[in-house]
Amino acid sequence: MVVIALAALLAGYAVPNFTALFTSPQEKEYQHLTKVLRMLRTDALLRSQAYCLSFDLKEQKLMPGLIGPEGCGDGENQEEDWPRWLKEHEFPEEFALQDARYSSNTQSQNPSTNFEVLIDNSGFVTPFLLTFLEADGQRFWEMESVGILGKLELRESK
Image (cartoon, rainbow, N blue to C red; front, side):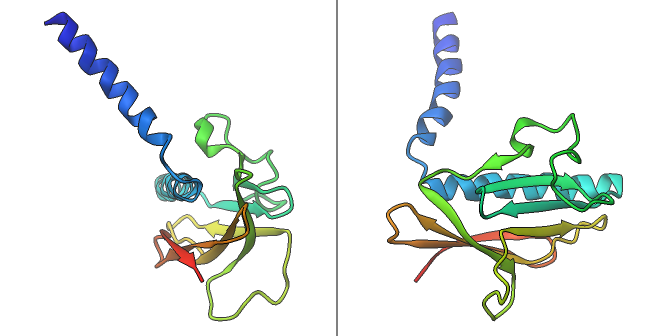
């Protein structure tokens, strides 16, 4: 009986880690960004604190942060007690962030290396669209926030 219980505990730990081997880079980034948005939105509502996400296209990083007098995501306005997955995050080499812009029907007129998304104290997430390119240069993927709650959609772009 003890052996069966230990085997069940081991399987419960190993199966999620095993399935991570078969998760695509775009799905991993989608899950990560969904988790970050959900956490910051919830925290913004509970604490009445505005947050932001800063996307650095040059350094290929995502930096969550508090809105301060100097702006967003400079690394110094992160809370010390945030979990590891809410700290600065580098995008994987096989999946590069090509473009980041606010959701609209037009392409960005002023491409910039830094892009910021606001999550205000009411939980509103500024609608945005991220375009990623796989390392082989064959496929583009888009992540778009939909609605005021910032729900993400992942789709392959043509």
